[in-house]
Amino acid sequence: MKVNELDFRVTNANDLSFELLVDGSGIEGLEEADNRSIPSWEFETAELPNYFNHFKKRQEHLLGICSCGHSGCGAAGCVLKKDSSFVYFTNIFIDGLELPDDYQLVFTRENYESVMERIQQEIRRFSQNA
Ligand SMILES: [Zn+2]
Image (cartoon, rainbow, N blue to C red; front, side, top):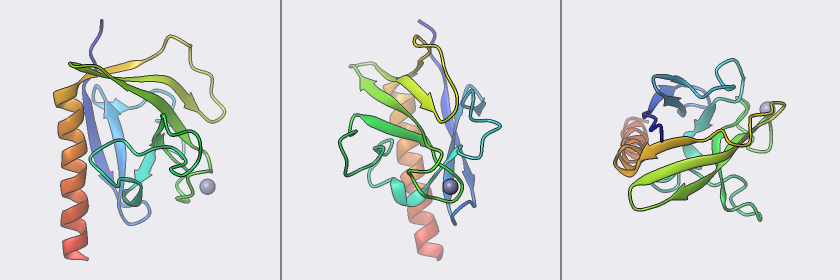
């Protein structure tokens, strides 16, 4: 099983957004798109935000939304699964783009959790300086 490396980049879209990086570049299919970053307000906990937080799709998580900041607009997401060692981004969907059914991204839990914690640190730092 190929294990990917998760990282992120801070952008100033909607004041503060995060663009996920996989193996050093943007998520395949999102690099050219206008929906590649996630605004800071979507990160309520040190976890990839749910897609449509208050609706039925709770198992689906955001990978990026339209630069207008509206999560119903141009969204990309995935189903997040975890086991004791790894985190899987499966069933990746990107508006207007078909990805192969077996396409998934795999990260160690340590890598995933440290990225989510570093995003929380960036959000705290930004709100302290606002
Ligand atoms: Zn939009």
